[in-house]
Length: 310
Image (cartoon, rainbow, N blue to C red; front, side):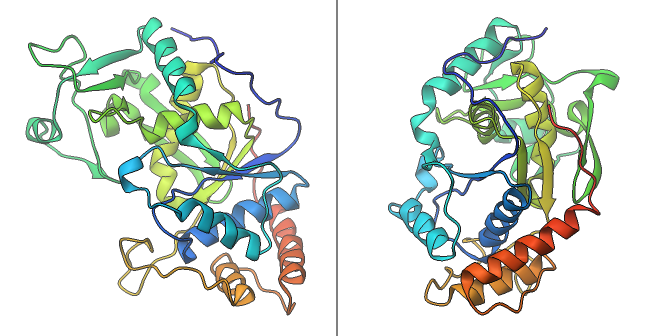
């Protein structure tokens, strides 16, 4: 059943390219997140478009006080200033609640009383990627005496469950939402909003046309496209860049010991991030380096597929 577009607030008309960088304020900007920031900034500039910054702070227990302002200051010192004032997800709860009501009214949502342990115990093959357990649909037809803990959105059954998209860097990607994932959570048992819902609603409200981010989020993209379809939102063009790893092959993150960007040496940081993206520049000043890197990225675009968005 189709759902009309979220109407809690007017959406921004996507006139041309609108991209974004959406960091979580769980610590200072490090090289892994800088690569994503740089790639999204370069893609926007190479398209002559707008680049926005959204602070994704809905997982409040993980947020570090002052990290959001530190991230914004670091970006500024690296020459990357957003074209509009930054926004914070924690201020958007009414919009997420509105989207949830739309899905509920359309019969696409149901309460779930299962714990993570119960889900894991009920699965013959446990799928765990990015801390996500596949869900067997235990509460799809009722709570069976359990108390509601979370809210899940239904995924399609059968052939309709396979969702594919063309990534501008990674190529064709497909996922069977039914067998690989199952119905997924939009509001968690602790009352917090799930990332999948928040990012889809915010991208729709901001009129985002192109999403450039790390390849660790490839797995999330089919879920987000499914929600876009249910909420009547356009699907952006996607580009997922390779993630930065540490010496042991782990994704570079705060948890794996990533060091904060040295804002006293911005050119060194940009050169390292650019090297990960296959870019180089002989410029010895930040703005000159960014200009040359933008030209190099624009030349690369000519060799990348440009799937239509919408």
